Amino acid sequence: MFDLNKFKNSNIQMSIRFPEDIYNDLKKLAQKNDMSFNNVVVSCVKYALEDIKK
Image (cartoon, rainbow, N blue to C red):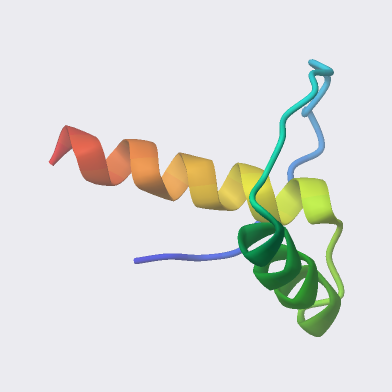
């Protein structure tokens, strides 16, 4: 199940480019849930990686 989590140990910095529509959707999701953009992205990536393992 997908959950938005707050990650405190996200300490590796990198740059990533998003298509504008995906960026806007992620930004809205972050604002709606009072979370940082980074936490939303990490939550989505974590969920996708766990789903791939299934």
